[in-house]
Length: 165
Image (cartoon, rainbow, N blue to C red; front, top):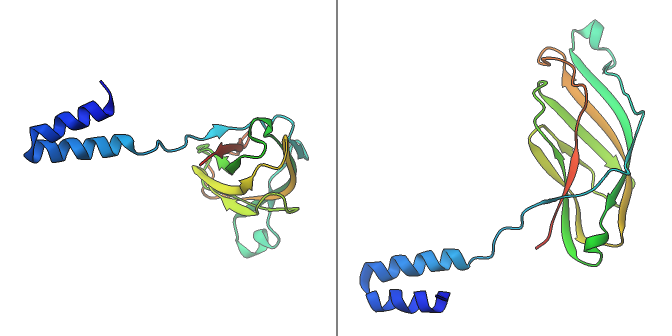
């Protein structure tokens, strides 16, 4: 039975039942939220490939317990399927369980600069996908407090997700 047939059935029922039915139908008719699509970023490169935590300047003398790590990421996202489409791309930092960590980055301009903590995602691109590969260089600084780190994470696994309107 079609939605129109179900709707006319509810109208004939009248009263409260009809209003509830109409509400249910209006909810069902809403467009589904775009589910994010994980982009292939396997051609992205991180420099240095293995980075070490370093105490922030003055940390040891001042009693400051902040650590930082700096890396450059040559981001290369496979966007062939969406060339010319309107889309939003997010950088995602899954929860890793190694204590509170934050990442902050600057870019050369194709992608947006931003900040992330575990479990969040940040908008890095919004607009028409310009070509088969979306590329930029990110200068990323990752920060943590040595007092709250359970253990040093072996690998930080950022990834990128695309949503279309």
